Length: 452
Image (cartoon, rainbow, N blue to C red; front, side, top):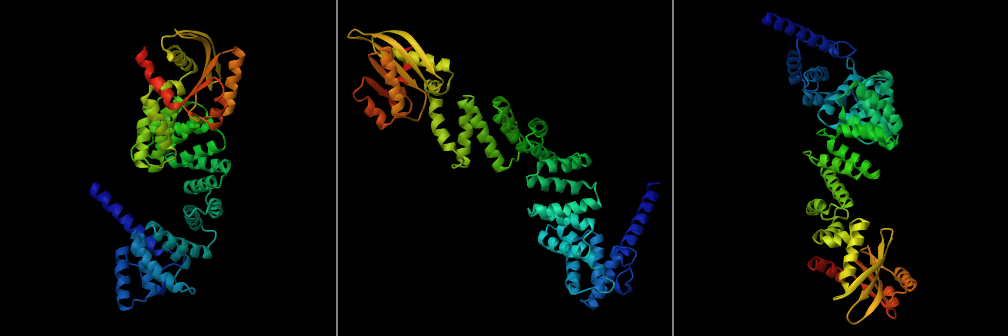
């Protein structure tokens, strides 16, 4: 039974090929009445025999091109159709369908990835039939790949009028409109394309981008989250989902997105770098410096000039090595104040210290007022601890001096991990204010643990 079935299938296939060859042009059989054999191999043999006698036999070359095309021998088909196209460029040749020549020439070149030849051939074919679905679709797709999105939309719209439900047309049309910054128009076409081809993950990703640009964040996140595990679209989906979570201050959700993205294999270099950078900077926002440093070092080793990686490493590597410095600059207000209180308690040797007041200005600085009693002197001292690594100008120092007078402190001590400007130093020359900058403050912070 199996052998009989295979025999029947074989007969049907041969009949089908013969029928296709006999009818591959609307003009009927090839020019000159050249007879088709029962299969394409016979056509090839007969055409080659004629071409051996006359290499310029256009009828034989046309039949040969069609046979190669039917065999999906794209390289030979393209060369044969190219030969015919060169000879019909000046006009019509009896028995040869010019439109078919250029169409099949274009399709063969497209299969071979020879897009320039394909584009020229389809353009020539369209000169004969502007309403042909296949030509409009192929030209529209090529214009899309050339990033000529306006032209692509025009051609694809024409193809859509001829075949409204073709998923490939809807797909290209939606993607082209998205690249023209028309996300709401693009959505309807991409949704239809996905309905017809549910496995098209790239279109699903683009639909999420459309939602994102249209500020429909929940719908966008739903799709990006769905695509996070996809081996192809996953890394980029994780990157955008994480960025959306960052924009809405959901740092822990962003960390999860970026970490999932980095678990993928074969990530594009630019996406990989951005995933690492955003994960590292999110860790820094969460004060997880120890997790951020290795990512920043990896980025720097692969791309030393990537964004501000060098600056971040210079800043946070030092913080990572000094826990007290990290607390001073990055910890909660309560931990910062507790650290500053420890500094006040140990700042003067062999002194009795009584803290009488603590005030905090947002998260910028803390003022601590303390009664200091040493064997040689006693006084009311005001301490200001400024949480910045930048420059401290005269205005802040003036404000500190005014505060000293209000509380009737005998002296002030102003500390920062940054540096004071020249104007700030000049202002304190005739006033009882000590300015403590980075190096000296770091020494104080380093010494705190030994005084426990």
